[in-house]
Length: 317
Image (cartoon, rainbow, N blue to C red; front, side, top):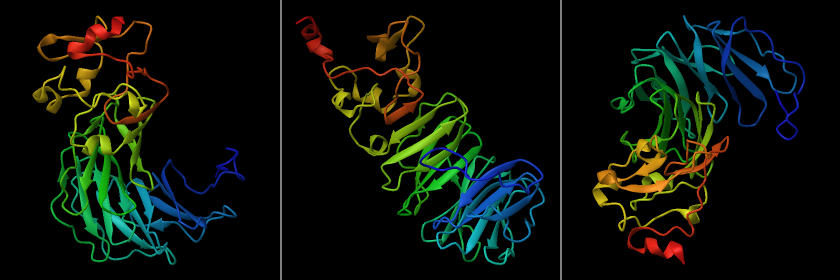
Protein backbone atom coordinates (compact mmCIF):
# COMPACT_ATOMS: atom_id res chain seq x y z
CA UNK A 1 0.00 0.00 0.00
CA UNK A 2 1.19 3.51 -0.82
CA UNK A 3 0.45 6.99 0.47
CA UNK A 4 -1.27 8.75 -2.43
CA UNK A 5 0.07 12.15 -1.32
CA UNK A 6 3.72 11.34 -0.68
CA UNK A 7 4.16 8.19 -2.80
CA UNK A 8 5.74 6.44 0.18
CA UNK A 9 4.87 2.85 1.16
CA UNK A 10 2.45 2.35 4.04
CA UNK A 11 3.81 -0.48 6.12
CA UNK A 12 5.33 -3.74 4.85
CA UNK A 13 4.07 -5.60 1.76
CA UNK A 14 0.97 -7.75 2.13
CA UNK A 15 2.17 -11.32 1.92
CA UNK A 16 0.24 -14.55 1.64
CA UNK A 17 -0.13 -15.41 -2.03
CA UNK A 18 2.23 -18.09 -3.33
CA UNK A 19 2.37 -16.86 -6.92
CA UNK A 20 2.13 -13.63 -8.95
CA UNK A 21 -0.58 -11.14 -7.95
CA UNK A 22 -2.24 -9.95 -11.16
CA UNK A 23 -5.10 -7.82 -9.88
CA UNK A 24 -6.17 -5.77 -6.86
CA UNK A 25 -9.29 -3.81 -5.93
CA UNK A 26 -10.20 -1.64 -2.96
CA UNK A 27 -13.56 -1.15 -1.28
CA UNK A 28 -15.10 2.28 -1.87
CA UNK A 29 -14.84 3.17 1.84
CA UNK A 30 -11.17 2.17 1.80
CA UNK A 31 -11.41 -0.45 4.56
CA UNK A 32 -10.67 -3.61 2.60
CA UNK A 33 -8.45 -4.76 -0.24
CA UNK A 34 -9.04 -7.75 -2.52
CA UNK A 35 -6.32 -9.46 -4.56
CA UNK A 36 -6.30 -12.15 -7.26
CA UNK A 37 -3.33 -14.37 -7.96
CA UNK A 38 -1.83 -16.97 -10.25
CA UNK A 39 -1.99 -19.27 -7.22
CA UNK A 40 -5.70 -19.64 -8.18
CA UNK A 41 -6.96 -17.85 -5.05
CA UNK A 42 -8.50 -14.53 -4.01
CA UNK A 43 -7.55 -12.92 -0.71
CA UNK A 44 -9.16 -10.19 1.38
CA UNK A 45 -7.07 -7.82 3.48
CA UNK A 46 -7.67 -5.23 6.19
CA UNK A 47 -6.52 -1.97 4.57
CA UNK A 48 -5.60 -0.47 7.94
CA UNK A 49 -3.52 -3.30 9.39
CA UNK A 50 -2.54 -5.17 6.21
CA UNK A 51 -3.61 -8.44 7.79
CA UNK A 52 -5.56 -11.08 5.82
CA UNK A 53 -9.27 -11.36 6.51
CA UNK A 54 -10.07 -15.06 6.72
CA UNK A 55 -8.74 -17.86 4.52
CA UNK A 56 -8.20 -17.53 0.75
CA UNK A 57 -11.24 -17.78 -1.51
CA UNK A 58 -10.83 -21.00 -3.46
CA UNK A 59 -12.79 -22.34 -6.40
CA UNK A 60 -11.03 -21.29 -9.58
CA UNK A 61 -8.99 -24.03 -11.22
CA UNK A 62 -6.48 -21.72 -12.93
CA UNK A 63 -4.96 -18.24 -12.66
CA UNK A 64 -7.17 -15.45 -11.29
CA UNK A 65 -6.59 -12.58 -13.73
CA UNK A 66 -8.98 -9.95 -12.39
CA UNK A 67 -10.99 -9.01 -9.30
CA UNK A 68 -13.62 -6.34 -8.63
CA UNK A 69 -15.72 -5.32 -5.60
CA UNK A 70 -19.37 -4.24 -5.77
CA UNK A 71 -20.02 -0.60 -4.77
CA UNK A 72 -21.80 -1.67 -1.57
CA UNK A 73 -18.91 -3.95 -0.64
CA UNK A 74 -21.01 -7.09 -0.31
CA UNK A 75 -19.76 -8.99 -3.39
CA UNK A 76 -16.48 -9.85 -5.01
CA UNK A 77 -16.26 -10.81 -8.69
CA UNK A 78 -13.30 -12.66 -10.19
CA UNK A 79 -12.24 -13.68 -13.70
CA UNK A 80 -9.93 -16.60 -14.39
CA UNK A 81 -7.95 -18.57 -16.96
CA UNK A 82 -10.43 -21.38 -16.29
CA UNK A 83 -12.77 -19.35 -18.59
CA UNK A 84 -15.26 -18.55 -15.81
CA UNK A 85 -16.40 -15.62 -13.71
CA UNK A 86 -17.23 -16.23 -10.07
CA UNK A 87 -19.14 -14.20 -7.49
CA UNK A 88 -18.32 -14.35 -3.80
CA UNK A 89 -19.90 -13.15 -0.56
CA UNK A 90 -17.44 -10.55 0.74
CA UNK A 91 -18.36 -11.26 4.38
CA UNK A 92 -18.20 -15.04 4.39
CA UNK A 93 -15.91 -15.68 1.42
CA UNK A 94 -18.36 -18.27 0.10
CA UNK A 95 -19.25 -18.51 -3.61
CA UNK A 96 -22.58 -17.04 -4.71
CA UNK A 97 -24.23 -19.37 -7.19
CA UNK A 98 -22.59 -21.29 -10.01
CA UNK A 99 -19.71 -19.91 -12.10
CA UNK A 100 -20.71 -17.65 -15.00
CA UNK A 101 -19.85 -19.49 -18.19
CA UNK A 102 -19.87 -18.32 -21.80
CA UNK A 103 -16.40 -17.16 -22.72
CA UNK A 104 -14.34 -19.59 -24.80
CA UNK A 105 -11.02 -18.20 -23.57
CA UNK A 106 -9.35 -16.77 -20.48
CA UNK A 107 -11.37 -14.12 -18.64
CA UNK A 108 -8.80 -11.35 -18.36
CA UNK A 109 -10.85 -8.54 -16.86
CA UNK A 110 -14.05 -7.98 -14.89
CA UNK A 111 -15.92 -4.86 -13.76
CA UNK A 112 -19.12 -4.23 -11.79
CA UNK A 113 -21.62 -1.51 -12.66
CA UNK A 114 -22.03 1.35 -10.12
CA UNK A 115 -25.47 0.10 -9.10
CA UNK A 116 -24.13 -3.45 -8.66
CA UNK A 117 -26.67 -5.01 -11.03
CA UNK A 118 -24.37 -5.89 -13.93
CA UNK A 119 -20.99 -7.48 -14.47
CA UNK A 120 -18.84 -6.88 -17.55
CA UNK A 121 -16.06 -9.26 -18.59
CA UNK A 122 -13.34 -9.18 -21.24
CA UNK A 123 -11.56 -12.24 -22.62
CA UNK A 124 -8.81 -13.46 -24.91
CA UNK A 125 -11.65 -14.81 -27.08
CA UNK A 126 -11.83 -11.14 -28.32
CA UNK A 127 -15.29 -10.53 -26.84
CA UNK A 128 -16.94 -8.62 -24.00
CA UNK A 129 -19.89 -10.08 -22.12
CA UNK A 130 -22.50 -8.42 -19.90
CA UNK A 131 -24.09 -10.40 -17.07
CA UNK A 132 -26.97 -10.00 -14.64
CA UNK A 133 -25.25 -9.90 -11.24
CA UNK A 134 -28.29 -11.32 -9.49
CA UNK A 135 -29.08 -14.28 -11.73
CA UNK A 136 -25.70 -14.83 -13.38
CA UNK A 137 -27.30 -14.90 -16.81
CA UNK A 138 -25.76 -13.31 -19.88
CA UNK A 139 -27.39 -10.07 -21.02
CA UNK A 140 -27.66 -10.15 -24.78
CA UNK A 141 -25.05 -11.23 -27.28
CA UNK A 142 -21.30 -10.72 -26.75
CA UNK A 143 -19.88 -7.33 -27.74
CA UNK A 144 -17.68 -7.91 -30.76
CA UNK A 145 -15.30 -5.59 -32.58
CA UNK A 146 -11.84 -6.10 -31.15
CA UNK A 147 -9.52 -8.22 -33.27
CA UNK A 148 -7.36 -9.52 -30.41
CA UNK A 149 -7.50 -10.17 -26.67
CA UNK A 150 -9.67 -7.85 -24.59
CA UNK A 151 -7.26 -7.13 -21.77
CA UNK A 152 -9.22 -4.59 -19.71
CA UNK A 153 -12.79 -3.35 -19.21
CA UNK A 154 -14.28 -0.47 -17.23
CA UNK A 155 -17.78 0.96 -16.67
CA UNK A 156 -18.59 4.67 -16.42
CA UNK A 157 -19.89 5.94 -13.09
CA UNK A 158 -23.37 6.57 -14.54
CA UNK A 159 -23.40 2.99 -15.89
CA UNK A 160 -24.18 4.02 -19.48
CA UNK A 161 -20.84 3.26 -21.11
CA UNK A 162 -18.34 0.43 -21.22
CA UNK A 163 -14.72 0.99 -22.21
CA UNK A 164 -12.39 -1.80 -23.31
CA UNK A 165 -8.67 -2.04 -24.04
CA UNK A 166 -7.23 -4.70 -26.30
CA UNK A 167 -4.09 -6.31 -27.62
CA UNK A 168 -5.22 -4.97 -31.03
CA UNK A 169 -3.75 -1.62 -29.77
CA UNK A 170 -7.15 0.11 -29.57
CA UNK A 171 -9.63 1.29 -26.96
CA UNK A 172 -13.33 0.97 -27.71
CA UNK A 173 -16.39 2.52 -26.12
CA UNK A 174 -19.77 0.76 -25.98
CA UNK A 175 -23.36 1.61 -25.09
CA UNK A 176 -23.98 -0.41 -21.92
CA UNK A 177 -27.69 -0.71 -22.66
CA UNK A 178 -27.59 -1.80 -26.30
CA UNK A 179 -24.08 -3.23 -26.52
CA UNK A 180 -23.41 -1.21 -29.67
CA UNK A 181 -20.06 0.56 -30.25
CA UNK A 182 -19.97 4.32 -29.68
CA UNK A 183 -17.86 6.02 -32.31
CA UNK A 184 -14.64 4.77 -33.85
CA UNK A 185 -11.92 2.92 -31.92
CA UNK A 186 -9.43 5.11 -30.06
CA UNK A 187 -6.16 4.66 -31.94
CA UNK A 188 -2.73 5.90 -30.92
CA UNK A 189 -0.99 3.22 -28.88
CA UNK A 190 1.68 1.29 -30.75
CA UNK A 191 1.33 -1.90 -28.70
CA UNK A 192 -1.29 -3.80 -26.72
CA UNK A 193 -3.51 -1.87 -24.28
CA UNK A 194 -3.35 -3.47 -20.84
CA UNK A 195 -5.45 -1.17 -18.70
CA UNK A 196 -8.27 1.37 -19.05
CA UNK A 197 -10.09 3.66 -16.62
CA UNK A 198 -12.82 6.31 -16.90
CA UNK A 199 -12.82 9.65 -15.07
CA UNK A 200 -15.65 10.13 -12.53
CA UNK A 201 -17.34 12.73 -14.75
CA UNK A 202 -17.10 10.42 -17.78
CA UNK A 203 -15.33 12.96 -19.99
CA UNK A 204 -11.93 11.29 -20.12
CA UNK A 205 -10.48 7.83 -20.57
CA UNK A 206 -7.02 6.83 -19.39
CA UNK A 207 -5.17 3.91 -20.97
CA UNK A 208 -1.93 2.12 -20.19
CA UNK A 209 -0.06 0.17 -22.83
CA UNK A 210 2.82 -2.20 -23.39
CA UNK A 211 4.30 0.62 -25.50
CA UNK A 212 5.40 2.20 -22.17
CA UNK A 213 2.97 5.14 -22.39
CA UNK A 214 -0.10 6.33 -20.56
CA UNK A 215 -2.62 8.18 -22.72
CA UNK A 216 -5.50 10.43 -21.73
CA UNK A 217 -8.39 10.69 -24.21
CA UNK A 218 -11.18 13.22 -24.48
CA UNK A 219 -14.37 11.20 -24.97
CA UNK A 220 -16.27 13.90 -26.87
CA UNK A 221 -13.60 14.01 -29.57
CA UNK A 222 -14.65 10.50 -30.56
CA UNK A 223 -18.40 11.01 -30.36
CA UNK A 224 -18.54 14.55 -31.80
CA UNK A 225 -20.09 14.75 -35.25
CA UNK A 226 -17.65 17.41 -36.50
CA UNK A 227 -14.31 16.13 -37.85
CA UNK A 228 -11.25 17.27 -35.91
CA UNK A 229 -7.55 17.12 -36.73
CA UNK A 230 -5.32 17.86 -33.75
CA UNK A 231 -1.64 17.22 -33.08
CA UNK A 232 -1.68 19.14 -29.80
CA UNK A 233 -3.08 18.57 -26.31
CA UNK A 234 -4.48 22.12 -26.36
CA UNK A 235 -7.98 22.10 -27.93
CA UNK A 236 -7.59 25.72 -29.09
CA UNK A 237 -5.03 24.45 -31.60
CA UNK A 238 -7.34 21.87 -33.14
CA UNK A 239 -8.44 22.30 -36.74
CA UNK A 240 -12.19 21.86 -36.44
CA UNK A 241 -12.91 23.06 -39.97
CA UNK A 242 -11.04 20.74 -42.31
CA UNK A 243 -13.16 21.06 -45.44
CA UNK A 244 -10.77 23.54 -47.05
CA UNK A 245 -7.90 21.09 -47.19
CA UNK A 246 -9.31 17.58 -46.52
CA UNK A 247 -12.35 16.17 -48.35
CA UNK A 248 -15.25 14.81 -46.29
CA UNK A 249 -14.71 11.24 -47.52
CA UNK A 250 -11.09 11.38 -46.35
CA UNK A 251 -12.01 12.53 -42.84
CA UNK A 252 -14.59 9.76 -42.50
CA UNK A 253 -11.94 7.12 -43.19
CA UNK A 254 -9.04 8.80 -41.32
CA UNK A 255 -6.77 6.32 -39.51
CA UNK A 256 -3.98 6.83 -37.00
CA UNK A 257 -1.46 5.73 -39.64
CA UNK A 258 -2.53 8.74 -41.73
CA UNK A 259 -1.33 11.05 -38.96
CA UNK A 260 2.27 9.91 -38.60
CA UNK A 261 5.07 11.11 -40.89
CA UNK A 262 6.26 9.03 -43.84
CA UNK A 263 9.93 8.16 -44.34
CA UNK A 264 10.62 11.70 -45.55
CA UNK A 265 8.84 13.16 -42.48
CA UNK A 266 5.73 14.37 -44.35
CA UNK A 267 2.12 14.06 -43.23
CA UNK A 268 0.45 12.96 -46.46
CA UNK A 269 -3.18 13.66 -47.33
CA UNK A 270 -5.50 12.26 -50.01
CA UNK A 271 -4.07 11.86 -53.50
CA UNK A 272 -0.62 11.94 -51.89
CA UNK A 273 -0.84 15.66 -51.16
CA UNK A 274 1.85 16.90 -48.76
CA UNK A 275 0.11 18.51 -45.79
CA UNK A 276 2.78 19.07 -43.16
CA UNK A 277 6.52 18.42 -42.78
CA UNK A 278 7.94 17.33 -39.41
CA UNK A 279 11.63 18.08 -38.70
CA UNK A 280 13.73 14.99 -37.97
CA UNK A 281 14.70 16.17 -34.51
CA UNK A 282 11.07 15.94 -33.32
CA UNK A 283 9.60 12.67 -31.93
CA UNK A 284 8.04 10.35 -34.47
CA UNK A 285 4.88 9.66 -32.43
CA UNK A 286 2.38 12.50 -32.22
CA UNK A 287 -1.01 13.18 -30.69
CA UNK A 288 -3.85 11.52 -32.54
CA UNK A 289 -7.42 12.90 -32.67
CA UNK A 290 -9.06 12.65 -29.27
CA UNK A 291 -5.87 12.48 -27.22
CA UNK A 292 -5.86 14.88 -24.27
CA UNK A 293 -2.42 13.90 -23.01
CA UNK A 294 0.35 11.42 -23.72
CA UNK A 295 2.88 10.38 -21.08
CA UNK A 296 5.82 10.49 -21.71
CA UNK A 297 5.87 13.57 -23.93
CA UNK A 298 5.28 13.17 -27.64
CA UNK A 299 5.33 15.81 -30.35
CA UNK A 300 2.97 18.76 -29.81
CA UNK A 301 2.36 21.23 -32.63
CA UNK A 302 0.96 24.68 -31.94
CA UNK A 303 -1.61 25.14 -34.73
CA UNK A 304 -3.06 28.40 -33.43
CA UNK A 305 -1.43 30.32 -36.32
CA UNK A 306 -1.48 27.52 -38.87
CA UNK A 307 -2.71 28.59 -42.32
CA UNK A 308 -4.03 25.97 -44.67
CA UNK A 309 -6.00 25.46 -47.84
CA UNK A 310 -6.28 28.58 -50.04
CA UNK A 311 -4.92 30.82 -47.26
CA UNK A 312 -1.51 29.16 -47.10
CA UNK A 313 0.19 32.34 -48.37
CA UNK A 314 -0.85 34.08 -45.13
CA UNK A 315 2.00 32.34 -43.33
CA UNK A 316 4.43 34.66 -45.18
CA UNK A 317 2.94 37.77 -43.58
